[in-house]
Image 1 (cartoon, rainbow, N blue to C red):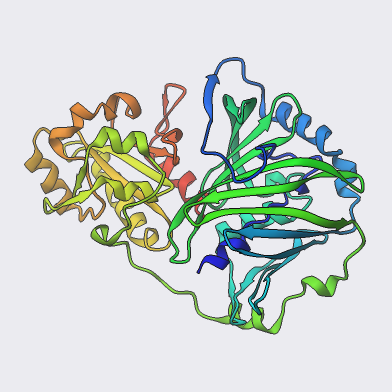
Image 2 (image 1 turned 45 degrees about the vertical axis):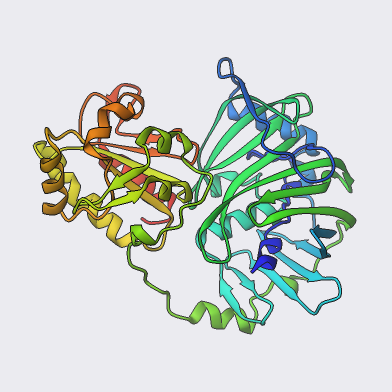
Length: 437
């Protein structure tokens, strides 16, 4: 349902004064957000993440200002095509927040809530359901004014990947890998220190991930901190603009954020266990892995030789490339672990594993996949060398597991700084990224 999209619209990147995280929100101009105009300028001489965050903290108002907030209430008006309404965001201490969304001329009302420990959503029918771990982290990032000050609670890794142009201005592009969930891309205006753009994935109404681009501008003072007074968002769901109508920093009663009977019932319900996805039924639209898909070509193959469209990767925020071969003893020892991980996890997390064979013939590759019950797809044998994938993302030896983010940049690999650390290290890190110990 479209309206639940509006429910995730508000970003309290506002939130972070002193922040330690990265932001990506700044001026994008008025009206709807323009198509992505990022152009990579330079990847040399980039600053440390902390340098970017320190500049951000100073630009927003400082850590002391955010830590000292007793509460932060903001009322935004929102507009999406012909629809409009109000979004009321209240943030308290220790990560607690409540966001209520209503629509003009309608009784529609949805909310996002956290008591600081548990996070839940309430739909227009009054049904509550727990937020998935990755969504809970993203919501806290958006609504908790102190989230960026406590970024180590949310982020497992982050790096400044280079200087890019956003809306005509130089920005530092920062990749953040949350402890649970998919990588975020945040952009800080080099001249002002303020965030200018935030790119991330979130589920649509059917549970599939969509790419969201959110922009922030018109930063003004609210009490001791600065907040963006206009927030613009674009995704396949449509374009939304929020304008701040009123804000204050008065204390908010703790009861505002308390776990409700509806939420208690939701958290008591059994957790659904899903099976690995059927590759032939996966959606084939999305914005991820354009470089990888172009290299692979139009199809992937399954163990029985069935072809599936390589565009299934476009909806997967993360891809694990598995460079392997049946003749490789260490590969044969690791493969069952990867297969088991895929079987247990792929049905409830959005990612795909792709096998890149170093076998000597196609029939050997297919036999390997059948013998080891490999359900994830492989690059067609006659495309492996032509694709250049081994040269671009592979390394000297196998088994090699390489984790690619949505823009096909390596997050982790079995080789680190020229030293072989093995695929188990990568799989462990990826599991933690998904919130699986």
